[in-house]
Length: 358
Ligand SMILES: CC(C)(COP(=O)(O)OP(=O)(O)OC[C@H]1O[C@@H](n2cnc3c(N)ncnc32)[C@H](O)[C@@H]1OP(=O)(O)O)[C@@H](O)C(=O)NCCC(=O)NCCSC(=O)/C=C/c1ccc(O)c(O)c1
Ligand SMILES: O=C(O)CCC(=O)C(=O)O
Ligand SMILES: [Fe+2]
Image (cartoon, rainbow, N blue to C red):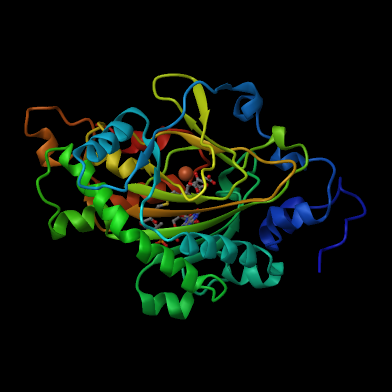
């Protein structure tokens, strides 16, 4: 049942309702508020209406029907260098798998707050399952209009025991079915770095851990005043993102102040380079700032899989990249330290990577 509208919105504690009690922004949206609570008003420079949005450019769309075509690997490396973002089509992940995972996401966020909140940071019996709202509410001056469920993959058995049943099978299926594409993308990208073979050590370094997030962006009053997700780059090696048909993801064009929309394409998957790959490639592949707007008319969902090093891995520029005498611009850092640094502060564009700069 939707909670009733509080009598006095001036004295009513929005944070307690949305964050502590676990109603999230979905709970706020269900109240039918006509104005945006002040806690969600972003500074003008973070509102997309104050940014330059360009329509003459778009991120590359790469057709993967023929992996054996050397042009495909070249397009992947080019996109990772010049955009840090691209979409893939004819990738081999069955459409039912992505439709099922999106439907399960809608089901999960449709559950009553008490059920979702069983997985909050305070209530969840495991750190590997976390339901929350915004990004890191305690560290943020203004909150983001997004609820999420974040699942760190350890094993099928652990997922069976800990992951919410409303989403488990669909999420695992999507993770399994995307494995082939992830490996091929990494093989192509490594060729461009002079890495001949992805042995076991490298495999762990590039894709030793995975996290899947379910993002829910409900319809928002006064959407232009807030954000769905603020400017950030991912801390992953690669991110594999499913979005629905609503749109709203914007990517920063490299070496410019311009933002480019990522249009939903039926059956396509969005791929982006994360900070770990930017560091491993000594800056050749770019982990690019992106953000999501809030929508005043429709609910939106997205489902990223973050493909990462293991928390215990040390990441730094690969020896193959430095072989030619290129100077390292990043030092060696423990990956879990890097991720903790990212999670402990509000979204701040590209500043996380300074943590690893020499
Ligand atoms: C993430 C960690 C560090 C957690 O380790 P753990 O021992 O459980 O540490 P912890 O002390 O519970 O968490 C550290 C802090 O991170 C926060 N945190 C942990 N998990 C999450 C999460 N899923 N979402 C938000 N914050 C989180 C905690 O709240 C802690 O903050 P604080 O309470 O100390 O203030 C560990 O699992 C690890 O090293 N993992 C490596 C692989 C990995 O998870 N990589 C991240 C890929 S995610 C990625 O690339 C992008 C994510 C993203 C982007 C935009 C968004 O808006 C968003 O919501 C998420
Ligand atoms: O919702 C989206 O399209 C992107 C979300 C995102 O950037 C993230 O979860 O890291
Ligand atoms: Fe992201």
